[in-house]
Image (spheres, rainbow, N blue to C red):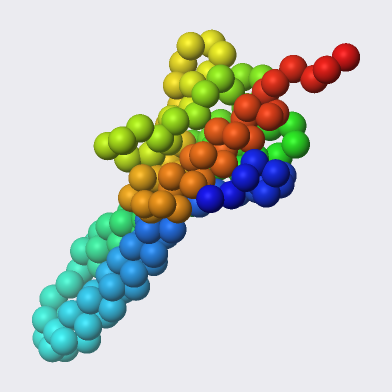
Length: 153
């Protein structure tokens, strides 16, 4: 375990498992599609119309956009703010807005409770990463407690 003094800002937490699976799945998709296309005879390939080829390419791009969205999830802490990137959506929070950080048993990722009563999922810290995810949630919780505490006069 790391102590809160070891977490210096700027610091970014990213899920390891999702990035590995996303990269492997992307490479596997390219390899399978290439192998199938090469395995087709010239007669079969000639039967594909331009519209069908474009549709297949668009479906591949859609699959890659989903994988990329999952792989880009992160939680970044700076001196003044917390940036949470979940897929293609992001949240910029001031430290004063962060009330609590938790990674509950059985939850897929960390939750951040905000001062307005709402909660944001932080997909950049995932329980699927095991001890690494638990340590990341603990580090962020300790950092948030430090940063959101009122400064002494």
